[in-house]
Length: 124
Image (cartoon, rainbow, N blue to C red; front, side):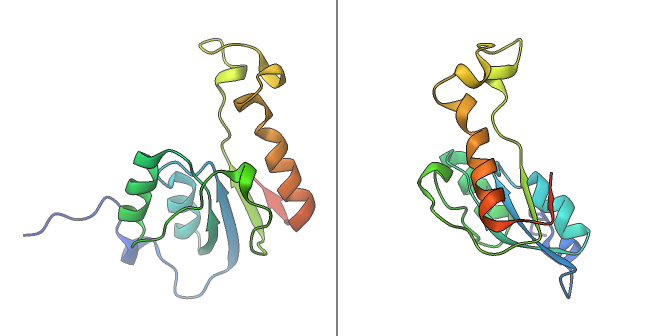
C-alpha cells in the first residue's frame, strides 16, 4: 500500500467553493487545510521558506506559493485573507523589537497593504 499524503485532497476539497481565500506566510498550508475543509477555495498563497514551499506543493497537488510578499504587487480577488506573519520581533523568545525590527516586524504592513487593495470581507 502506498502511504497517504500528509493532506488528503479528496477529504479536504469542497465540490463548490463557498468562499475564496488567500494565504500569506503560508508555511506548509495549515490555514488552507482548515479553510478547504470549510468549503473555501485557495486562490493565492505566499511563502519564502524553500522547505515550506516544497511541503506545500506536496500537500496541495503541486500548487506552488508565490515568493516574497514584499515583491508581489497584486493578488487575485478574494473573500478572506489569512496570514500568520512572523512573530519573533514581538515574542519574548525573539528580539522584542516589534515594529522596529527592520525585516520581520514590518511584514505586518504587507498585510495591511493587501487588505486595503483587495477590500476582503474578512481577515484571519
